[in-house]
Length: 188
Image (cartoon, rainbow, N blue to C red):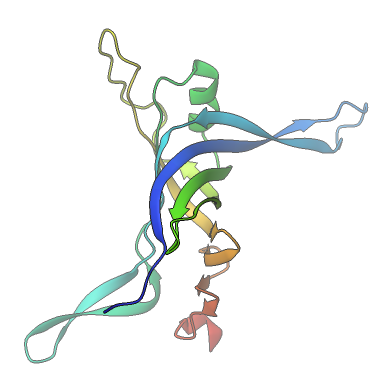
C-alpha cells in the first residue's frame, strides 16, 4: 500500500498585484520614486508559466526529442479576470515591463483529516503580450478576457518551499533548489 500524500483540496482565493512607481515631487528632476503594490484583481483565474527546455530532434534509433541545455521555451503567464475595472485593465496592459505578484491560498488535508491553509506566491517580471484584450461581452455576465504576459523572471514559492527561480536575462535556472548545471553559460 502506498504512503499518504497530503492532498490539495481547493484554491480558496487569488490576488494579483502590480508594482508601480510614482516620482516623489522634491523639485528635482532626479527625484526618487515611491513604489507600491496595487491590487488589480481578486479571485481571478491565473495560469502560471510552464518552464521547459526547447528540444531538437536527434536521430537515435529513429526520431527522439532531446533538450537543448540553456534554451527555454517561451514562458507565458495568463491572467483571466472576471469583469475587472478599466483602471485595472489599464495597469495590466499599459506597454512596458511589469512587476507582478500573484498570491493564492490553498486548502490542504493531511492523513489525520486536519485541514490547513497554505500561501502560494509567484513573483513575475513580464511584458503584456497584447495591448488591449479581446473582450467577451454577454448580457447578464461579467466581461471575460485574458491578459497574457511574456515572462522574463519567474519565482514560485509554495508555503516555505521555493519551487523555481528563473531569470532569462541573467541566464539562471534554479528548480527545486538545484541550479541547472547543464546551463552552457556556467562553463564559458
